Image (cartoon, rainbow over the protein chains, first blue to last red):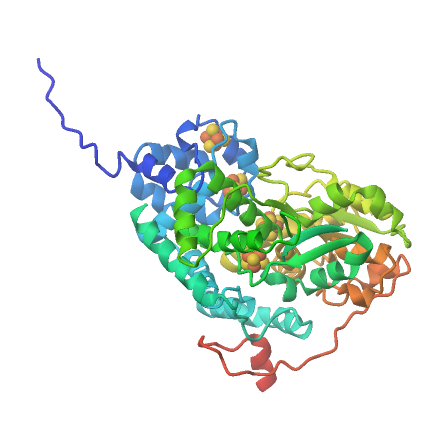
Length: 194
Length: 328
Ligand code: SF4
Ligand code: SF4
Ligand code: SF4
Ligand code: SF4
């Protein structure tokens, strides 16, 4: 009896998935060090709303299950509270891995609900245009698109914030906006090569 | 006079105006010199990090680069917003931890004629500076009106004590710094079990019911401990707990009325400053009843201003509920 020679492709993106996630995370992610202890899920205030606990999600990543991992709602439900991060026995940069997964899901268009990606994108568009965030414009554009029915219930708050001068009607722009744009344009090119 | 470079963040002159006003009012008492970083930009909050890595860090690092150029005799950057503080600290920390990130971010900064060497600045939250540089003995010596009888829930939120790259806090889950500060002001501080739990962050915008549940837990706990007010150290926490308290109540058919104040406002009261200098009255859940309990009269209403419609500068702006109501 012979064993059939099976060919594995070393460049298979699924085989390389863990590496890729780790590579695209800001610091040294230490995702490879996860021992699947489950401390993260047990510490998470949002676990009940997640498709997968962080531990399960990391198991999917290791198993190369790209599509399942990138379409999980878990990174979108993560509120970056860092409870899991300070408790993880392996110092996995869990919250930062969640950010990485969001950006990968956006690029692969695998997110299931567009509310969060749209919110982030609207926010980023404003920052890229003005250099400052602009709550008034942000909330309005976002609510109209995603929660039109909440608009009436938001009215008292919106009015309160306006009359108490806690919201700007017009956005502020930084002086060095051209400098900032040049920096971000270069950063986006680098994002592609890295 | 302790000198600092100051990163106010976008909220300080909008939603967290009361934080800014009260901080400016107590600067002289604390003998601190806060030099605002010239032409700082938004740190991207928790939004940019989830879109593009290098641009997100380059956006943050521009502020660090500007700060290093602005010599005013210090290398300490103070942020008043927890999310700003963490973002600035994160960029400095990860650029130091991972050379590839450092190289890319500096490559991007160079396109704007800037650079930043990780480790050249010390990034700290305002509360840390008050506790560890100025010190509680000094604070205590400045108290002229102790907050005797005011029951305060000290709420830190998540991003100040965690992940705590530089190990500055007494504990990651139950740090005592804010409690000690409020006690130094003479307040009655409850042992708030949820002091570093999450307020929902940007979930109020994305998944309101998730956020309302997190907000409800905080309000309920503070209420059970019979807190008169809750104190925050972050514009976003204050915004979530104050501005969304009404909606949270509607959602759960509850009726919590817990005023949410900034710690600097209570410091100002204890230092004998006028409440109107300290941004009182800007909170949506009014603090005047709670404060009158300790004999402090605070304004309830800001003078009403008619929002004037300006030419939209660039963005196609839909109307805000407030504006629509006025037109009708
Ligand atoms: S706590 Fe850390 S080691 Fe444990 S499962 Fe989560 S990520 Fe893995
Ligand atoms: S950082 Fe995210 S995953 Fe970790 S405990 Fe908080 S919400 Fe859960
Ligand atoms: S965290 Fe918020 S307030 Fe701070 S700079 Fe960023 S957007 Fe502005
Ligand atoms: S408590 Fe809320 S605003 Fe404050 S850091 Fe946590 S999520 Fe952000």
